[in-house]
Image 1 (spheres, rainbow, N blue to C red):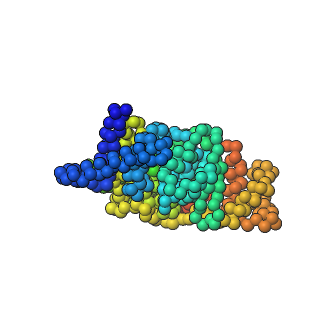
Image 2 (image 1 turned 120 degrees about the horizontal axis):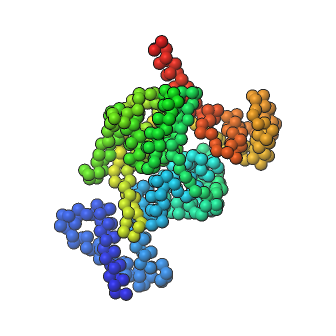
Image 3 (image 1 turned 180 degrees about the horizontal axis):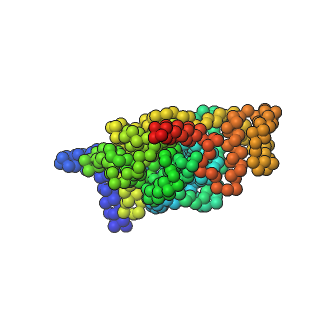
Length: 464
């Protein structure tokens, strides 16, 4: 027992040293002013022992529980939602995730305004298919309030056995009542880069996040589409929450011939660095349009900012999320880990976008769905109108669609035609993999395609 108490005391000393470091008190240690440090260590030990021996509920004062509470407390005192302790299980899942596969429902979350917030739903996952959106505040998980939750708390509840379901209650901006989504958990295998040719000559690349395989996959697919006659690029970073910094930088290096990619400035000089583009990895000077929205965060903002500030391409869409801090992940001796904000990053122009985001060159709003339209969608599902329409029309004409809209009006269902077309497409794709692009519904992508068509026509006119 004495040995166990001795080990606990040693561990507490280490914990307090971490606390003093996190609080900026380490200057006392290195300046020789150790008296106050030891006073704090002594105070902590006194409180620990009093709780262990006198608190009425013995089950709540196990050493592991108290120490975990101390760790949580010192991290919470930083008031930084991006610095977090990770259990052994969660740390293992994080390592798996950066390799491109993990289990869950397919959302990337963080803390904004003290609530668990969806940074982005991952494309072609259960969460994306039920309609969750970037910016959704998760206020309940299976009926339990998430007020005061850390990201780790939420992840531990959301992840679970494949095939089981959970219900997320969210507050969405512009919608008066909370929305509920029941989602079946699945194995999320990330194909982080998808591409296709649009209009026979435009290369479309959707990067859903940055993991270890992402840069190489992008390199390979660039080559494939070049061989198919690609003469311009649309880089879709919407709802891309970031990921590995090195992967985002490597892709930026492929697209830029020179100039800075990103500057990182930390507390220590060793944490500060400037990443520059290298000519050897340069992709020919094809016109580039980058699509961004409020779900574009971290690594995707680094890539978008590098392209914008170096005047390599045009940003289209909506202001990005605004996560301009860099996290370093450290593994701890017991297999758990800690994610620490160690620096801020700056775009090539020297701007910090932390909690501000990057403004696009051309603002193009996504299709907005009102509260009334959400109610209308529920009514459509209850009546089975869209399902019946698809069953009766393998393909449909403009006249068929006009008849459908008249039917909706007769049922007092008011909804924008563009949303109805999307609902039809969702029903058509219910039993197959969704198409990568949808120019009928995706107004931001359609705008980018039209811009590149104009550019290419102009270039051809100049050549002739």
